[in-house]
Length: 232
Image 1 (cartoon, one colour):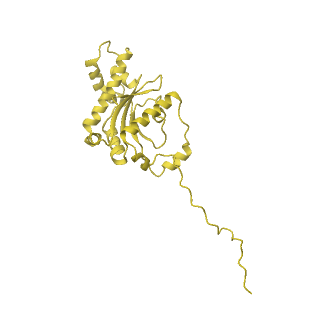
Image 2 (cartoon, one colour):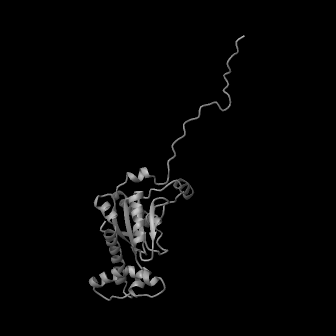
Image 3 (cartoon, rainbow, N blue to C red):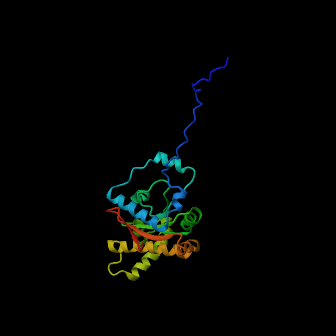
C-alpha cells in the first residue's frame, strides 16, 4: 500500500527569509566617498548650527562602537586646541567614526600632526582639513606673555609667528590684557597653521589644488558654541 505523504513540515525545514541588510549608523567608506569637500564642509556647518540651536543629537554609541570596529572612513580631519571646553565631535554634531581629531595646546601644526593629516586625507580619504582656533586660549596668552615653564617653553614657540604677524597689523594695545589683541593673535595663529600645512606638505597642497580636499580655518566662540569658518 502506498504511503501518504505527510502535509506536516518537519521542524526546521521551512525556508528562511533572506536577511535584511542592516542600515548602518557608522559612516562607511561608500557613503564618505560619495561626499565632496564642499558637502563635507556644509555638513560640519549644519552640524554646528544644530549644536548651537538644538544641542547634540542623541547617538547609539554602543552600536557605533561595534560597527566601527572593522574600519574607519572619517569625512574630515580637525586640528583643535587641547582645551577641555571644546568637544570637537559634539561641536559639529558628529559621532564615532566621523572625524579625525588632533589636539594640541594652541592648535598649531607641526611635523607630527602634518603626518597625521596626510594619513587622514591621502591614505584614508578624508575630504576636509579644519584648523579650529578659539576664544580665551591659554596657550595664546602664554605665548604673548612669553611664559617659561618646562617643555611648555618650547611648545609655545610654535605660536610665535602669529604674535609677530599680529604685531605688524594690529592697531591698539598689544598685550594679553586686551581681549581684542588676544583674539587677533588666536585668529592669526589659525592662518599661520594653514600656511604651514600648504608650505610643508606637498601632498596636501597637491590634493587641495586638484580639488580632492579643502583646507580651511575656523574659530570657536566660547560663549555661544558657534563656529565661524574663515574664508570658507
